[in-house]
Length: 370
Image 1 (cartoon, rainbow, N blue to C red):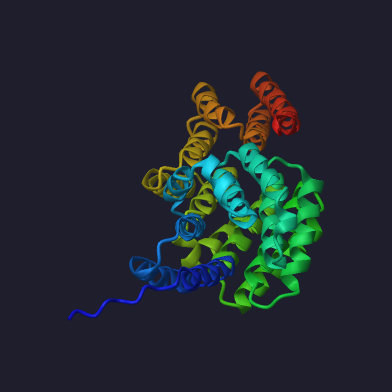
Image 2: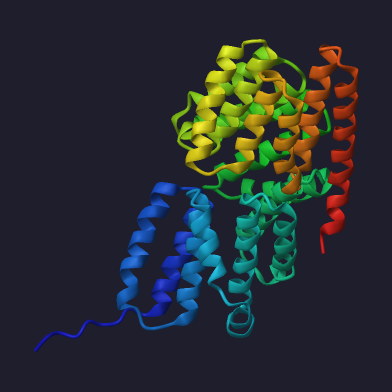
């Protein structure tokens, strides 16, 4: 007689899912990938349980976000039925659904929708017993508020996240990210020395812990800080350091460094180097279908190279349609300063006004928060 396989208890699989999610929160991609394979192998032999299957899909959507497979993460989340979720699951699973949806919309650069999902998740946060889970919520919310330049909301959530992550081992990656988030807000407050000190501290921790991804992001962000002060040589060195780190080069974040490096070379008057890095960035943006950075690369080309204000305005519309007003303000100000140097008073005045209008739109964004 053929031996009947004993079914795996769904509680054991649920426990494995919890362990898998804990590894994802530690940003350990290799270990999380191996754990996912083990969980998937256990499913065919598991006692049937729809809640555990839903839980797997939610954690898998979070795994896909970590591994930069954003479209697949969105597909998994879109399969979840809202009414079934609210009627048949507990607060924790509902919390994960809203949190991960917020994270997905954040990566899609739909920051208002992200914050709206985070607010629903926050209404269930008091049912979340795990301090690290609450810290993760505050971290994700802090970066979303940063993107719409709500500095004090961002700093408030970042502080809550940092204190919790610091109190636990194995969350060095999140300590680094929170430190950089503080620095990013300090840049917007033009507290330059404090920002530079925080970035250098984050880079040091990342280097000591072999966290190449965070080290690359640290150099990239430090480069932004220098570029905002027009310290172009220092900015150039920071972006080159970021791009010398393999983990950064292999990430979609490398587009940001290549874009900024091209922009800095244009400002330094090195058009050949600017075109070289711009071409590399555009090829990568095409490969991963990054429409925003395609538009931004076109913008710096039409400003500093072709000097074509009509084409510049067309590319700017891509950012406006996506409500990326901080980018619109930044690039309009760069255009205004460029045309001022060219002694073109009309265009300089036009883009100074565009920058002011974009900053007003950033303030209005909060009105869209339901």
